[in-house]
Length: 287
Picture 1: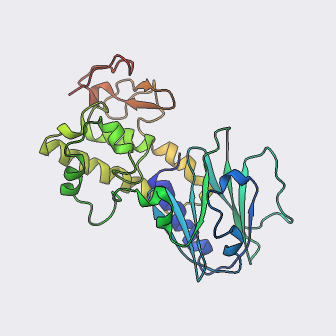
Picture 2: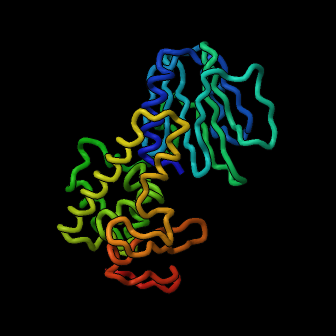
């Protein structure tokens, strides 16, 4: 799933390639991708792209005098830039293509989604805050006003484990499954630790890990073409998706806890005092 660093890089890439260009065609291929119907997608046509914004994991294409095209790539969605789009309209079928946007230059992009769980979402709205997911977002962790005190306030009284709290878009915008693993590894904290039980020192350590991990990931992705961002993300991860490999910090074996629809990875030596976490149904919270 694309998270804050990849979506930020896509925002930069699209700002360079879209702003100032006119949208001439918006072609939905999978009707299920459209989550709004008023204004229609055709209302985007004939307008120039004025700016590209990021809200958490949402991308917002703002047009000059027209509506916004807001998209969430979900777990298996992606944006593919085409310097030259194929001639003729795309044909509906069983392939991954969900929506195509064409510019007056002949360039444009495709939104695709792999797999059977179709969660890619596209909204055409007058204001991005009309999208429920955008309206409920918590603060952006890379914003200038997101300081250590803000994080402490957000976590105060939290009864969830750190892993779940970090992934809650209503608490902190943009962090998903992969970067929550990376942040907790950098902070040397168990994913099962209670979020509301952190000491001042632990909150400071988590804040530093949060900002540093995301900032470094953004910098690694900056300037890359859209097609290279997935590979960059994977290569930069130290623990997530690396079950069975040695921890790059201490050399211990990276372990995994599986859930019904996801999994987490961690290093026992760095994060849990050397104790492997048991199955989620049997695990006790590690302090």
